[in-house]
Length: 106
Image 1 (cartoon, one colour):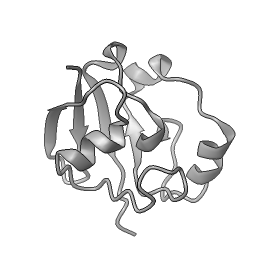
Image 2 (cartoon, one colour):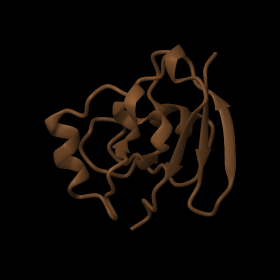
Image 3 (cartoon, helix red, strand yellow):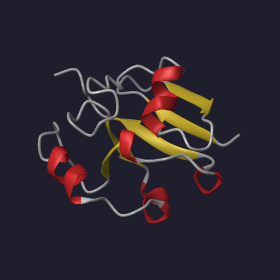
Image 4 (tube, helix red, strand yellow):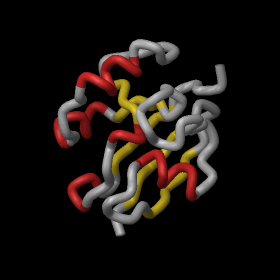
């Protein structure tokens, strides 16, 4: 099973297996990773699963759609590598992806 490495805002590292087909947000929720609030449950209707994807992985992700881009406009401290983790589906090509969780407790 592919792994995701989550780095919380406090600097804690969580390396967890996330089943293929699940979102990176679901992987965080299922493994109690702090900082991924996911108020909308993954419907791309908030921005509380906002995270920063490690630059080495950005090119391996599907292009952001307009809805995600619009929701990220509401995120605190949006950056060039900002993504909503509910919109990234885990697959074997993403094994080892590093996700820096944003401060979503605002």
